[in-house]
Length: 339
Image 1 (cartoon, helix red, strand yellow):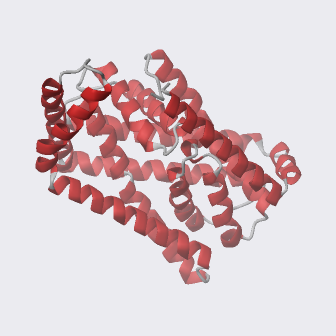
Image 2: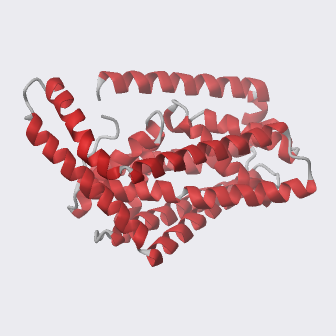
Image 3: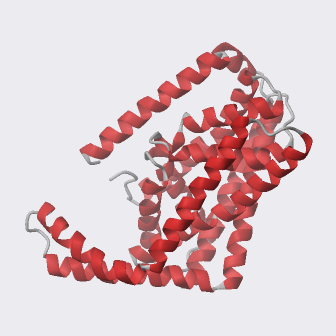
């Protein structure tokens, strides 16, 4: 692990512990612990089971996308590869920046495809997951608005989501519009810089040619994914299935601590809270938990300590379980999560 990455991970971990510490102090750590101790094991197991369904659905997304790129991997292998990507997201500050390269390495190892093809596959999955998430937010918030006043906190969260996703969409559109220009110019800028850092170990001309070829193949693979309408529809459907599995998992987590949560609240809470994953804390640890509490206290009327306990049960299935499974997968395949 490079010193810079190690330092960023350490600082992010310290920040996560600090945020969790403040959260527990504000809601009452003793009450949270007491609630967790009395949690119903059956519903805790159900939370984990539906979290596994979420992982399975999104791993099938990855497998379907790769199929459109003529890359074939077994169903079980795709599960462990995707779990490895989630593991990398969860132990790397700013999540996706660490997960996608690791997933691309895993895909290339298990299928012998090119690295840029694997990268195009996992990047497509991440982008396509945005479509159902926004739909769930608008459906959930839209229904909530018909039965209660939308508070300032929820309005801010929805606005932030729309702005963030809108910015991402615009950035993707600009990159796609000028992809040929990027292929022509970026390698010429990057190659000499890498050559200087490598202190003569790399030939700038060869590196520039290699980078241009990789970029060209990457954009070509992305285009192949987008033009296969049948597979694209299947991928979006699997994405929606994964989001709904998470929704059921969160519902089960609340049932485990003795509370019922309205389904329309669950629909918008999960995508909105996940926005905190963009923080510099590993996988949004601490930030996502705090976001759930901030969203659910005013929209459900449940006490903060019970909400915190339910969120911890839920995050046990959606954060810590993939860390364990994905960590084993990346270690077994010999891929380091942080470089």
